[in-house]
Image 1 (cartoon, helix red, strand yellow):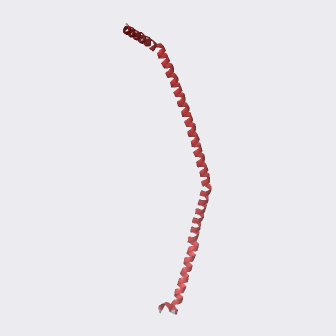
Image 2: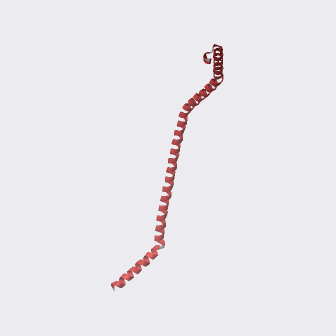
Image 3: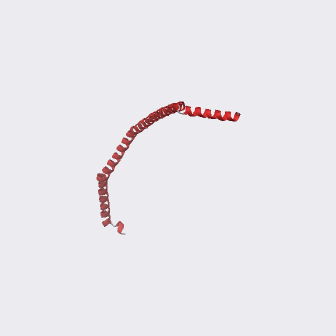
Length: 125
């Protein structure tokens, strides 16, 4: 059988062991350092993300609280402006109505009452 031939057996073992050693040296010298640097970089990135995620969460909460307080302040100011405008509008309407009733509509009301009195008196007679 050619697999167990004593002449070629040593040659097959020699080349198999030689190629295995070359492959092992290539992996140890080239592939493992690259993999190690990648793993180290990933670990550093994960650690940086873990430490800075707390800072980002704190900043997020601070921004959220600031935004809520600013919105509440704006709402209070808008409510104050609206109430002031509403009250001044009511005051103007009250003064305008009183002025019109006093000056211009007083004559019309007097004429109306006089006319109604005349109509009533005519019906009564």
